[in-house]
Length: 93
Ligand SMILES: [Zn+2]
Image 1: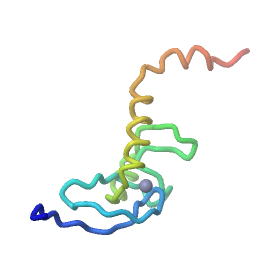
Image 2: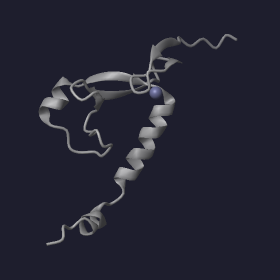
Image 3: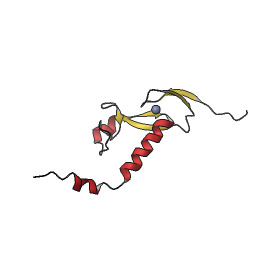
Image 4: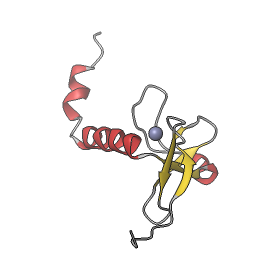
């Protein structure tokens, strides 16, 4: 095959799996080294607005396609309106 693509082997930052990728098309995610989670993500898996400090210290890390898909699903879930959630979770007096 003449179809030459420069492939790099790297480790996925999220699942630690080794995978090959082309640097031009690899997905990267901003990781917060303090929490070792994607920027804005909390340990419980919920999303909250990242603090300026977290944004400043975050570094770009490579992520494998599997994890990208997982994050896309999560993102789609998070994009849904969550207003109803507030009413469900209203604390009882
Ligand atoms: Zn992964």
